[in-house]
Image 1: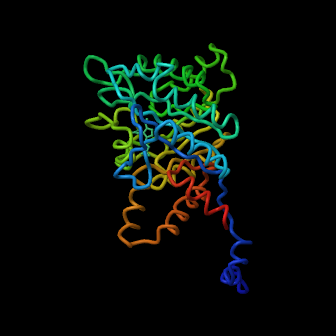
Image 2: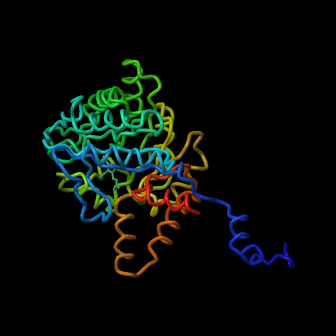
Image 3: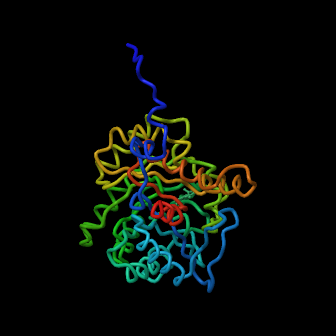
Amino acid sequence: MSFPNHRPRRLRTTPAMRRLTAENRLAPADLILPAFIREGISEPSPITSMPGVVQHTTDSLKRAAAEAVELGIGGIMLFGVPAVRDARGTASLDPDGVLNQGIRDIRAEVGDDLVIMSDLCLDEFTDHGHCGVLDADGYVDNDATLEIYGQMGVAQAEAGAHIVGPSGMMDGQVAVIRQALEDAGHKNTAILAYAAKYASPFYGPFREAVDSQLTGDRRTYQMDSANRREAILEVELDLEEGADMVMVKPAMSYLDILADVAGMSPVPVSAYQVSGEYAMIEAAAANGWIDRRGAIMESVLSIKRAGANTVLTYWAAELAGWLKES
Ligand code: PBG
């Protein structure tokens, strides 16, 4: 078949024509802002490898959440950076611990005007930096970890999270958290499952952001970057276990996975543009090597085009501001 009269450039002639024919567009409500709250600081603390991103104090976090509401952002994903860590990450269960208190503070600030999500994982809280507790051989013990995850889910729901985000890649985590939430009466607390989460060097700057104690890697629980089919299995398992939303992470190096998941998922799909993706563009832009705003816009739009309904991005606030002005 040939189309002798088709000249695709016709639809590219003016900005208005390109706007009319754009197949995808971004809106502030598509964006989720990841944010860090750190215990025991009196001023926001910059993260060197993520220029423009800080570890928040309670006050600056509340301001960021209020600003997110103003900007019409879809949600905020909260990570806690505790002052004290131990082998079992017990600070994660303390109702007054940094993450649970942070959830409570922003819920008091924004109520239901912004969807409050919390990272449900032990790596920020353990003194060895792994996402779970270790057995005698130093291997991450799946089922012992699940027990703590269930309790964490309840603690976060009680603090006011609308959605909990299990990111530890333990087998069966969604089922255990769902059951714990039901047993505690939190039937409307939703689960955003980090379903297809790959072991990736692109998490590098995040390790600084949460003062991670990890030496080594997470390859015995996070997925191998060689694998594509396995992502479908992970998503299917999480759906069976009760995931309300699923996530692919990182985003840019996994757009094929994202497209696969978007094609089969009956629930909303998120993708996480991770710290290393942020750092690369910021570093190149700081050197004058790429157009910062153009690269940010294109990188996030490409994630949406690949099939994400929502995108977690450290640029959420700035990007929402641009989208509002255009
Ligand atoms: C685990 C978690 C990590 C990230 C989000 N949740 C770190 C990891 O898995 O090593 C990384 C996010 C990013 O790099 O921006 N709690």
